[in-house]
Length: 480
Image 1 (tube, helix red, strand yellow):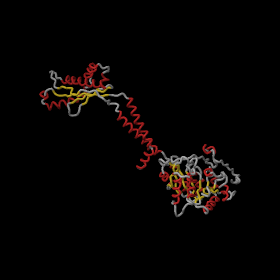
Image 2 (tube, helix red, strand yellow):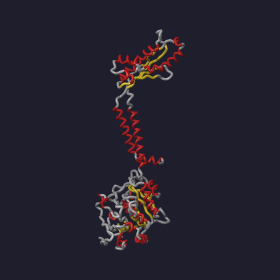
Image 3 (cartoon, one colour):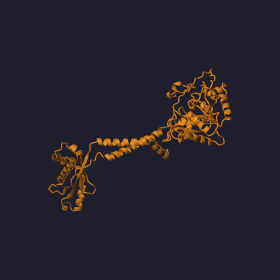
Image 4 (cartoon, one colour):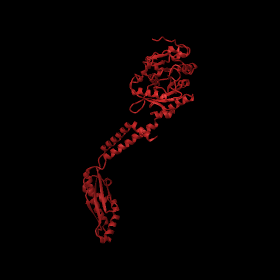
């Protein structure tokens, strides 16, 4: 992925990252508040030689002390030092417990010796540090006293320990900062991992890469589209998107413009039918003579969207039961013409791949500037690929966050295998805030006839259609 891709991931997942950062900081704050404060006090000793003559010179005496002082550091937690401290302060602790809370250190190339004591009480830490420093000074003198009784080294308390005002643990601010940083890294990691593992299309570039076809447009999400799918009849960002698709479609191949265009998708539920309706209306609004053909003979929905009786239509024309002009409906005072699907046949693929269908499209191509054909999805059934061979090309509709890249690639390959020109792609239902995409449910029976058990509840109000048997063809019904 490029740097821009990572930026897009962070931009889209900023809520997750912020929440993760706040959770990390809050957890660190809560943990710090739950911890018992620990205070640290420090007393400092100055170790020197008693007489320069005893060690030859002051300089050599200093070197002598520096060498010996390394051993004094390890003496601080010895029983000879701490037992007197326990007795003097009347501490209710054992020697090992006190030894774990006391330490000593000496800055390099100095004769200073620092005694450090830690405790949950600030006052007790200061008392233990001072008492331990004094006891250590006495122990150093005792250990350095010669057999003749001479004391060449002495240690003096030059900086008594003060009662500390703030604890050394927990360091609340540092913990909060570290917790926030950890939460930030976790949030970014989850966002990147989610993007890497997410194979669904989320940008027009994803669709273009998977389909190897250019993007004709991105259709923004409209909360009213579910109840009012014909958005091109009213002003909205989504309606403008369909006009953009209309314009881009004209530039796909100016030398060989496509008249009959199949609108399909990879899988059910990507909004192909609403795309077909709105694109046809947009073309009609531009002054073109447009025919919208409902060729989804498994689950036709366009007639319901347009509010037209779809019981007589394409299937009746193909089997010779109804004349073409009788089946075609003029919609919105001639804005577009519409050819409904008619009765659902038992063999949609054979019917759409018949010579009658090819001849019908050729006949319609002489009468209309544009023919928009709503076809079933490509992957569940072969109808769209078969139908597209008789058309001038196909447009592949995809849905953000649901259609996977491999599904788009497979659908595009299905068209190319039968030498169908893929005119472009449409990324459907993009939320305005980040150009994402939405969808509606779609049920199919892959065996051919429509499966009513898969029909979503929200479609119960749609006009039901009777499934034909192999020997049954419905007679045309009179129009109102």
